[in-house]
Length: 270
Image (cartoon, rainbow, N blue to C red; front, side):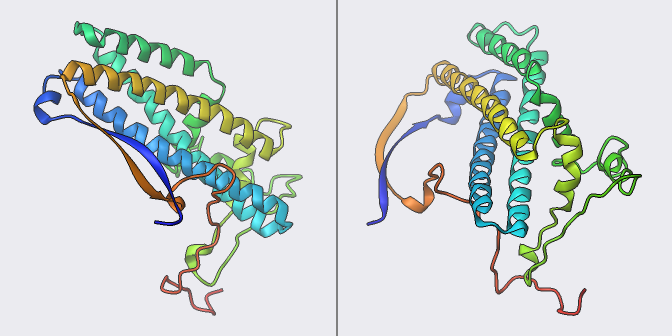
């Protein structure tokens, strides 16, 4: 493979018998954390790619493309933030369920989980990602007085001179409605702060939350590996197509979806 990089990867294998040695609820928590880590990792990659797309759009000079790229970036931000709030809830549930647990090997895991919970409680972004999760990502909060309805009811109030845009394409897969992100600015941007500056600040805080959880999970993995008695380790170098490797600053997320086989509305639809 000519356009490829050699990447060293280590595969660590558990047998079912070995994993069965890990008592509940620690085994369930371990698998839940594996799932959460995978999802946060994937969501972070999409967020980084969307940020790169926005950076490119800022240099293009097109207001329309800039709005589409901004919308894609905030969607990716809401997605990773909502997943991190699910992690916060997962950690709290584990701490609660293991309050009387006496498995020595997992005592530090519980202590570390509580420390992470307390640290996250101190982060200003936590309330914002809770709002994302409850009302603008995992749930849409229709009819919720503290959800989008709180914002839509303010439209057209005295002095409201805002405009809201939709961007239409011949393929519906590329039509986007930045109007909702324009609406969310009032809720998710601190008073007086530029929306882009707010996004950059949130990105750093969200990235730190994700990093702290991934470190926690890595340490949990080590405990489970040792406790289970697993030993099968295989390190090998794989040839990986460069298109599959995320390069910071060089891997934008596309904002236009050209799919000739996708659904297309009638030309007279509007």
